[in-house]
Length: 168
Picture 1 (cartoon, rainbow, N blue to C red):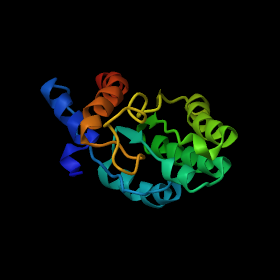
Picture 2 (cartoon, rainbow, N blue to C red):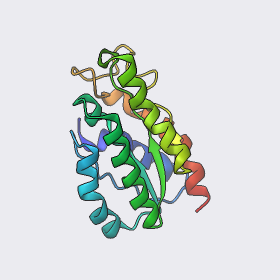
Picture 3 (cartoon, helix red, strand yellow):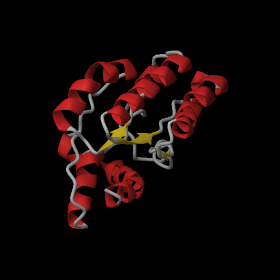
Picture 4 (cartoon, rainbow, N blue to C red):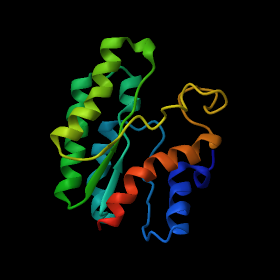
């Protein structure tokens, strides 16, 4: 899917239409892990000096069966670095398929909720809720949302982002 069709660009267009002045910079890399995010975050924070960071990482760690403890540790450090730079953080929670087992999937998802509370940051509930199991909304891999799902994701994230932008 072309990057201009992704939810970040869709959200940027929506914000522009609503005269909410912001610049969204998409630093995502397909297949990235929390460790990859840690390796890149300092440079991104220094280069862009964001006021708000939308943190959407961890799903690929979960799909690879990484320890939920390690995922949580890495996410915590990412949040800490963002906050230390002066940026607010909006955490976008993820889920992984149920075939990983209830214990693992619960630990994985709860990481986001626990970190949001611990680090005093807002969290967007699973951004693919009502999309992941919906007919015609996912790519063939059944892991990634297709173009049709992008406006729904943008709307969901926007509902949590707009109040942060208005308080800036």
